[in-house]
Length: 288
Image (cartoon, rainbow, N blue to C red; front, side, top):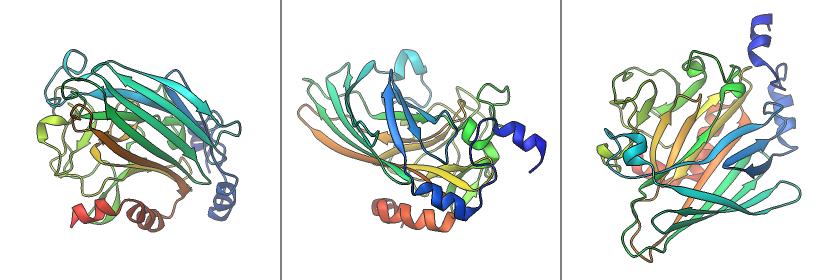
């Protein structure tokens, strides 16, 4: 590994690991903590400071595709910590949205994944305006780039979505460049109206599956995420990758269960894809 690559990696901890060493490191497991809207995931395959996730970054209205992000789309919300296991294996959070929607989050850290279970319940008197929410993982350090660097797309070749049944690096062809806000890229699944996604460039190809992720600086590890139900896949301007989860505007008294995964695994693309499809069989069915 040359000196330039080492400089880019900064404090990344697994620069020289073989795949076998990565697999052994996975066995020691992950831990999670949360404070002031930031979830931190720690583990041997992650940067020394952990992987930071803005959780929750935003709760969003429909009609967001060509609307002002602050004036129209964002719905005020607050999240509080209920409980953290002493060993960092589990968290419970509550989110309160301005219109009466509430979300209870149970987050569990495993050997090589973080599991998310959300129970949403609407306590308001009118239908909730919340159609989707954003979980924003910051991946600059994991992919080997400075979080503060000027080129917001420097990490792009490390990132992937699934196209034609295979993990495919970004940028894909075609690649959209025009939108209310740039840069970035959005992939919309067929079940979501075109007007209800992020106001960044919308890729003309629909999301084939709900998995998005990236490779580590040394290409030995994959980070990836998926949610069900999901609203969109999004490559953003904070060196982030989203699989934003869908709420759909709950009616008064309505409840909805939502689940998500973050995988931190050895860089075996085929194995990851098999595991994801086993965890989210609804996505494979929708793709058919």
